[in-house]
Image (tube, rainbow, N blue to C red; front, side):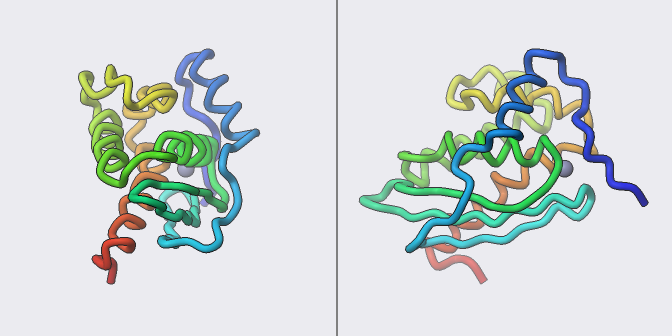
Amino acid sequence: MTIDRSTPDLGSLYQEVILDHYKRPRNRGQVEPHDADVHMRNPSCGDEIRLQFRLEEGRVAEIAFTGDGCSISQASSSMMTDLVKGRTPEEALAIARRFTEMMHGEEEAATDKALGQSRVLKGVSRFPARVKCALLAWDAFQEGVKQTRGEAP
Ligand code: ZN
């Protein structure tokens, strides 16, 4: 089976932003010391993320990721880390919920400015097979918040 790592056609402007994050990912690397350390995969596409972050004074002080995958998963990871940095976990989780709604095709969620640049990924919702690629980083973040609260297994 071949893995399709191509970028779905989302329009050229969106494509450009996605490829920019893919080629020059923000916040790539590791965080030491960290409060959360999550490893997640998206088997349907082969994407992988390791996400680490540290909380200071109730905010995400530092966050970084490593891993490999398609342009959508990598761009989404880059955008996610940019978006949650400096926010409280509660604020960040609210954005995660909005992003998930947008990925499930909710038009109203896609107009939420809190989603910042990640709104360029809206079009991915038209490609159900790729939605998990875009959600991987956010799922990892949500798992990380559970770790910081002692809720993770
Ligand atoms: Zn993918």
